[in-house]
Length: 408
Image (tube, one colour):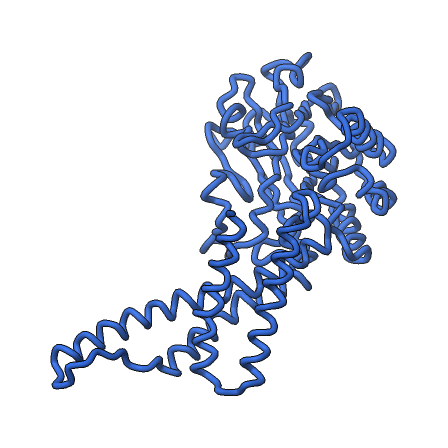
């Protein structure tokens, strides 16, 4: 029933938006093209809603249909909003003319071609942006560099640099050359350690088969470390039985070992330099709003002193808000991902940073600080659902740890 209601809404929006096209042009060819595209998208929508499962939505062909649907439907929503505003004005003008004029009948003025032209011009912006996001934006990798200062960073680790990537979602990739460029870009940072904060796949371990060799080329002085994200557990697939699901997870763990990655499953490691050390803590996924909560901070911190300098890897930033930022063990820096920055938004450094995802996650992209503790929410390396990115580009985070100098 909910899909039936959605389809009815889609049709009504389509018919209303068509009025702008009719106002601009009388060409039957253009009218026919509009109707053809609308019917094709509607037919595809009905097919997808009838035959796809939730997991299948994460396959590239399905994602591209979803992207095309967004590119066609979102501009129409803008048309409807603008035209509805015009209709309100037309209605009140009609009322005024009836009251003030000699004509006893009520009629609304015709739509103005100028308004429809402006509406179509505005609607073309999201259409072009969403198409660009699918063609180019999803592989528009950005290296974002930060320097964070700490009073209690051991002297030997002043200048220690880490590169963070997150949310690879290898099942979505469709361009080996572009991904290879990004992997090389990670290595070019020559960081002391590379840290991956979860969601290597969309659904199943086999999605990494074509990419395992490429990602095994990631190298750093201290190695490559990783944790699991919510998609890595295979929770979004209908398995024949729990045994098959468990085998898939073990295969994913083994695959990371084959790539030379050190997967931390509620565990920790130390980095040591000349008798000084810092701790790296990795927890399994812990999220709110129905996401898996397998992360165990207590277990992950076994053997670590409260006084140790600690870097924590936890996939979901809601973990930081709910449990980490005020934990008495003082996690100096937490690294997360998960949000993708919704793969859509507007970012102009120093001016604006906005995405609809901000209304669900307080920490959704970049560096945040509370109580003297930091979190970096990586915008993600890959993509999921909508097969593109608009304004929120795929990210490689490079963070340098600095010893705060005493200025007294």
